[in-house]
Amino acid sequence: MKTMKFKDRPLGKALTEYVESPMAVAAFCVVVVFFLAAIFASQIAPQNPYDLATLELLDGTLEPMSEGFGGMTYLLGTDEQGRDMLSAILYGLRISLSVGVISTLLAFALGTSLGLIAAYKGGRFETILMRIVDLQLSFPALLIALVLLVILGQGVDKIVLALVIVNWAYFARSARGNAMAERNKEYIEAAKALRLSDVRIIFRHLLPNVLPSIIVIATTTVARAISTEATLSFLGIGLPITEPSLGLLISNGFRYLLSGKYWISFYPGIALVIVIVSLNMMGDRLRDVLNPRLKR
Amino acid sequence: MTVFIIRRLLQSIALILVMSVLVFLGVYAIGNPADTLIAPDATEEERTAVIQHFGLDKPLYAQYGKFLSNALKGDMGDSFKFNEPALKLITERIPATLELAFAALFLTILIGIPLGLVAGFRPKAFFSKLIMGVSAFGFSVPVFWLGLMMVMVFAVILGWLPASGRGKTVGFFGIPVSFLTWDGIRHMILPAINLSFFKLSLIIRLTRAGTQEVIRSDYVKYAKAKGLRSSRIVLIHVLKNTLIPITTVLGMEFGRTIAFATVTETIFAWPGMGKLIIDSISTLDRPVIVAYLMMIVLMFIMINLIVDIIYSLLDPRVRLEERA
Image (spheres, rainbow over the protein chains, first blue to last red):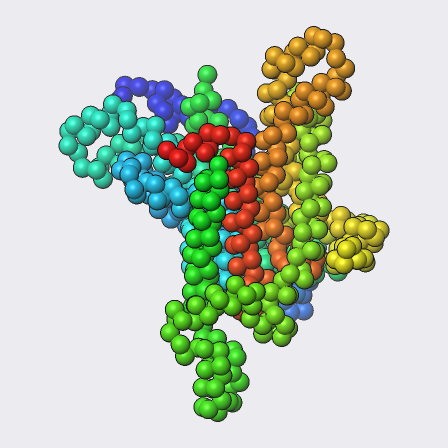
């Protein structure tokens, strides 16, 4: 293995193939830029949109590119409180992306573990788990999240919890499905013969072999989680007003959209769509690259 | 066969009971209903009288029993806000939601299948690539964002179509409907397209994949060799065989349509049950929330049951698997 060149190793091979699609590379770059913008929002934003001292009420609902009283140019206009929309979008991106990523990582950990254990152990546990997964996947995700939020109430922690409950089943189904094909292979038998512990076999031997297909699901799940959060926040049952994600910004601007002040809703919406479409394009390419059935 | 249906029926009833417990516990865990029902300046006697009247002093299982027996009689309590039976409020709004959902489904079939056929027959043509691009876009874009853009472009900027409400309705067997008046249809166009967009993208892909599979089959080659007109080959040989998976998916998509109707109805102020539930959540109108959740659970379990039974009729292997 050590003498193999990077591009011949599985990871290197996948990366070389991924780079062959210019669209996929562009999507990856866009996602990286958006993540960096979200992380460094407080450094690059022209103003702190939630520091009331810096807001100028007289600058309310200014059009894009207009100059305010303080001499500041608002590239994407302002909302009714004189808040610079570009800054609000950067801060909103931070909330939307963290909700999407954190909920996906938790769903990934929970769903994959349960799916792998089910495939490895089999028996009653597997039957019951897969029944729950099938049952849950027969209901639309938006509806389950809506019901959960009605019960749980608003808040970042609550929407993350709701998204984990909605999304774990996708990981469980995929992990179990892929592990089923692996569990009878010789290397697992060999590991069993060596009397390695179950935990070690599941996480050191099974997991790496089902990981590629689960990474694909994780990418699209981040996109779906961001979209679901935005939808719920738009409906007024997702995040509270103190955590203005992109969805809440769009919701806030909806009233002004009808009177022609489009920018309050329009630009956060564009940011949201660019993130979601780029993530999905990455997911599509990864699926092509990592799916062994599509090879040759 | 009968055994299979009875078994699935029993499973469904058990599931409805489990869900009713979950909804009951969940919604009642939000807070003490006595606080919302009793005025803050009520005396201690009035408080106890109200609590006794609603049975809130009884143990939880007794309260659940009462809730269940009332629910079976069709009594889900009165709305706090409208002072009317919650179930009545919801059933009044079902026709509007169903009308919108069927309009969306109709558009999906009317537009999606022909576009999918074209993309399947001429995969290399520019038009086909355009269709597939739009379909990929429709797959990932959030429904609510698309709705907002439609309002912005067609209602605000161009002013072609109205952005909210249901328009003029007329009675159709006693049910108010929009699709029989010109004003109603104008109101319905934007929300129906909005609600159908995701399904449209899905159906285009399915039809395209099905078409590409079928045109390679021997019977289509044979039909061509016989010298049949291509319109006949498309309509009889190809379309008929791609319709099977499309019907299944559309059946299952119906549930999603009802779920996403909440989003579309909120944007276009369409007076259906989706808008009612969002309004009820913001005003904490608990009986309406509980009644809506139970209705939705019931509806979904019924849809799943029907799909399963149809499946077992179409495909005997499903029944054999159940028995094993």
